[in-house]
Image (tube, rainbow, N blue to C red; front, side, top):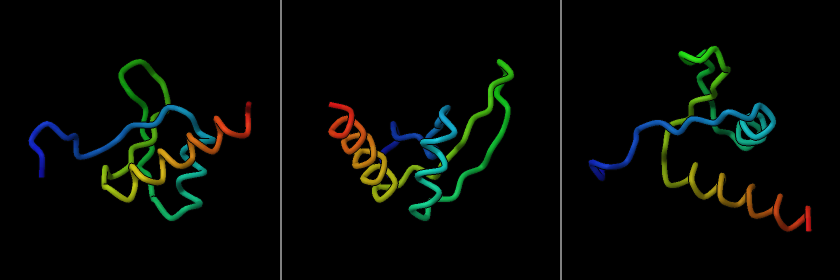
Length: 63
């Protein structure tokens, strides 16, 4: 594993976290030091592919 790569990826948007959850990626929900809800996902190659694909689809549909 790359030493600079974080083990977990934090998402701050509930809808995005729920979309990734629908695709099969489970999250751990916690409150950060600012009092915000954060959704933490295991940072894997498959997760990054799903996240990138969702963001690209959103951009395509919003144009």
